[in-house]
Length: 194
Ligand SMILES: [Zn+2]
Ligand SMILES: [Zn+2]
Image 1 (spheres, protein in one colour):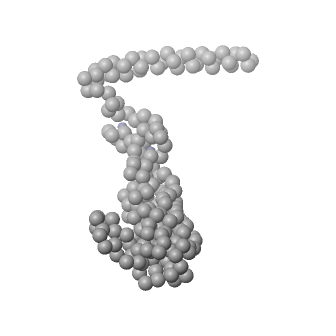
Image 2 (cartoon, rainbow, N blue to C red; image 1 turned 30 degrees about the horizontal axis):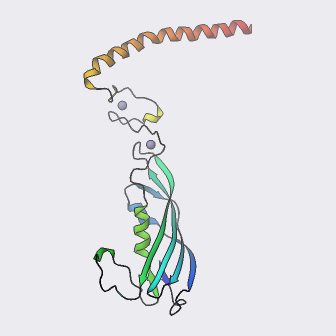
Image 3 (spheres, rainbow, N blue to C red; image 1 turned 45 degrees about the vertical axis):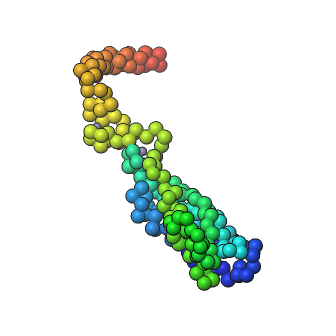
């Protein structure tokens, strides 16, 4: 977005506020982003500082990310704040060339790269759909949030594998008993009804 600052030129301390909707499709280039769901909402205040123009404000954008554990879509709003001064003249003794302030271009400020960088940095590195998302089974890729799969439990230590087999056998033999209990309780309720 290019901001015209001609109304502030020569008026130190003067400022204006601006609210714009901007295309946000560039955010879809980030691997964590599945879809861009809306325009960027940008609300900026631009103030003449004497040496240049200070741009402060906020950016927000609705996106659909993919859960880093189970790959299901997660809707979220990227939100970030902006605080950058555009200078009238280049700084003479800049210590770090990568940290240089952007420059005023004629009567305009080009906030495009400022907006792009700020939003890309605000994308969470490892988004999750819910705090306790169990993710996918490393064996078969099943969605573990929808129930366990038939794979042997990969979290069990290999040295304890014989024990887990024994436990599995034990739980198999106890299952029919539970079913019997369940059946008898059903019978009871049937009897009490009649
Ligand atoms: Zn998940
Ligand atoms: Zn599995």
